[in-house]
Length: 209
Picture 1 (cartoon, one colour):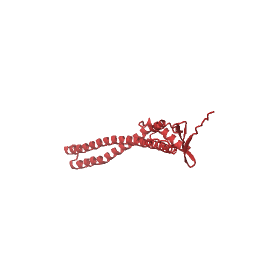
Picture 2 (cartoon, one colour):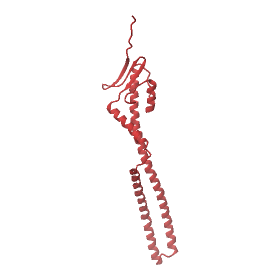
Picture 3 (cartoon, one colour):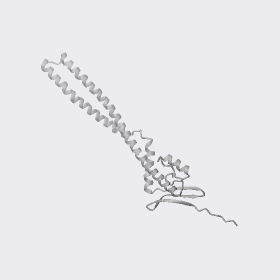
Picture 4 (tube, one colour):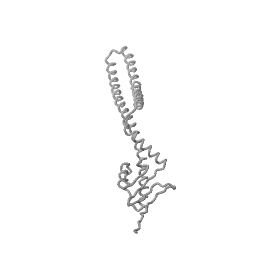
């Protein structure tokens, strides 16, 4: 009778504080590597995933409350500008009226009208500048709000990518210990990681679940 030789599985583990983070085993020429997330790590990763999923589609959409808040700021800015113009030009007009009335006894003369027209032209220029400032203020509020949203999405994306990078490092350590070729981890992008793991025949638990 011929003997049947059983092929024993071989492999390695990466442990941190007694917890197995990554393990690899080879059975029948096939290498299987698992990455195990801790509960807290998975909670953070899931939060980042959900935050990206929930916010990407509406990052450029402002809710009625956000629009109302912006409009309130614009209204306050506009009123402040109007008050500044009035505070600057109303005393000038009143002073002109008093001066002309004292000198000529009435306001029905060319000297008054010429000086008044000059003041009004200057005020019109200030009002035009205020209009441009209001437009700039609106654009600034929109830009600031968008930047805050983009910064938040970049933040949660960096969290996700960091966890992915950590997973890749542990996976590669397990593969290296088992004498297997490691996976290129030059990119921590989630989709690239999926491609790398699929090409390497690796099953990453929790991350791809």
